[in-house]
Structures are given as structure tokens and as C-alpha cells.
Image (cartoon, rainbow, N blue to C red):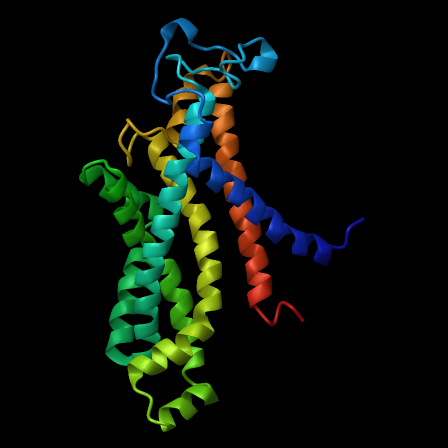
Amino acid sequence: MMPPQRRRSLAGPLGLAVLTLIALTAALAPLLSPHDPMEQDITRRLLPPVWLGGVPEYPLGTDGVGRDVLSRLIYGSRVSLLVGLSTTALAGLMGVSLGLAAGYFGGGVDALLSRLSDVQQAVPFLVLALAVVALVKPGLLNLIAVLTVTTWVNYFRVIRGAVLAAREEEYVWAARALGCGDARLILRHILPNVAGPAVVVATLLMANVIIFEASLSFLGLGVPRSLPTWGRSVADGRDYLVSAWWIALFPGLAIMTTVAAINLLGDWLRDRLNPWRRR
């Protein structure tokens, strides 16, 4: 039996390999997709997967209006990864910047930003996102903006705590004694030493964002209906769970696999970047 430490060491590369495969699939979607994901053919509706008696032209079957499930699965990866990566990057830029400011300067800056994050955390994320998305025009950019504004707190809390500890370290006092200004001290000395926790938060947050995007798409909010998404594909198949289960199953498996791979990578990075956990 493989020891737990060995299993953990393999989990990260495995998650990275799966994510790389999904990213390549999204990037090469026009080449890999056998059909237009929005093309409808009523004469071929509800065709089963090829191993259940379907036709090779539609390997994973078709949905209720004759659209190819495989093509929608491939193109759906584009939306999920784009929203996940964009939101994680923008929320990270916002949360890390505010966390650095709050932790380093303290005082009124810290009090103001901390109270703002407390207010936002008091409202469940999905409820807040639903309220904002319902008020704005559906669109990919609007969805990314809403998710960014509602997830920056994840970075802020972690980075603020790390900076509060780092600013009292001897190397910070030595740099200050040598005449380093605040901007140089933050960017050259403190930020590199708190980047590890930010990377871990980014991986775990991306998994949550993909689930949130799928949830909003399932409810018919977020991105326009002209864009195929995994969440909307699951919603399209909920009326056919008995007669055509493949419509909802395959996009659901895609969501589960992507989130699991990100979590495996995040756990591995947490162990690698945390010296106390390596002992």
C-alpha cells in the first residue's frame, strides 16, 4: 500500500496534468469539436452515446434539441476556465493589494478595509452574486466583474495576516534601517515572502469560482445563452434524467473532474509552500 506522503506527492502532478489536458482541450476547441455546439437537429434529438446504440457522428449523444453533447462539453470548458482564471487573477490583484496596504500601514487603513471585508463576508457569497447578477445585463465580462468583487476577500484576509507577521521580521527592520521607502519595502521584501499563501488561495478559489459559474449558468444567469457552458448543459438535461441521462451526466463529470484536479493541485502547493507542513 502506498504511504500517505507518497500519495500526496503524486496528487499535485496528477492534478496539474488533468488541468493541462482540460486547458489544451479548451484552447483547441475549434479543432477538436466535431460539430457546432449550438447547431440544432431535431431529427437527431436524444440520441444515446455510441456504446449504447448511438451513431459515431455523435459519440456522447445529443440533447433535447439535437445538439452534440461532446461539442458542448468541449466548448463549455472555455467558459469555465476563462471565468475561473480571470476572476482568480483580478480578485487576487485586488485582494493582495488591499491586504498589503491593510497589514503594512495598519491604523485607520486597516480598520476601514477590515470592516469592509466583514460586511461583505456577512452576506453569503452565492446570495450576493445572485443579487448583483440579477441587476446587471447578462454577459461574460459582467459575470467576471461580479465574481471578482465578491471574492477578493478570500485573498485579503490571508495576505493581511501574513503581512502583519512579516512586517515585524528582522529583515524588514533591517531594510527600513537602510532607508528603504514604503513602496520598495512592500514590493521587494514583504510581497515575495507572502506570495506562497496567495498562490494557495488562488488555486482553491478557482475551484470555487468554477462551481459558482456553473451554478449561475444552471439558474440561467451570468453568461448569455448563446455561449455553451457546463452548468447550462446540466440544466438542459434535468428534464431527461431518466430517459436521456447523458445530457446532464457528462458536463457534471467535467465540473467534478476540474474542481477535483484544482483541489489536488492546491493541497500539494500548500504542502510545498508551507515549511511547517514539510517537517
